[in-house]
Image (cartoon, rainbow, N blue to C red):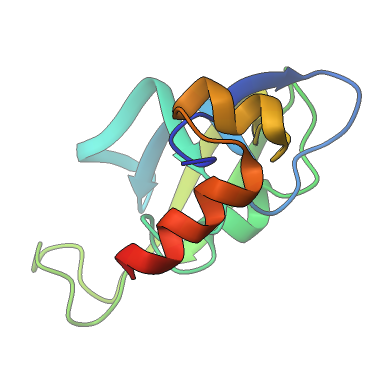
Length: 130
């Protein structure tokens, strides 16, 4: 319930950390040539989600808002696009924003907001459902 009631909070005073949600622009090249599907603007990515090529997200850690950087990765040998499989690539990345997920405080007020119970009763109900 807390996860479902979380909110996204913008971070402006520090560089990217693991688990942050970032918004980036990027363009990838292989041998200096852009490839299809390798470019996006205002793309939302959660660091640590492993939704990009191995090593991509790790190299975003430490970037600051507005910073641009070249990220070097190698496509996996078993990559579905055979013409990219096993090849080194460079992604030029610009970091647009950083945000984090803020969970609500798990107290009686939260319990009453999401149910008709107080915190103790809500926990008991949850245990019965498990």
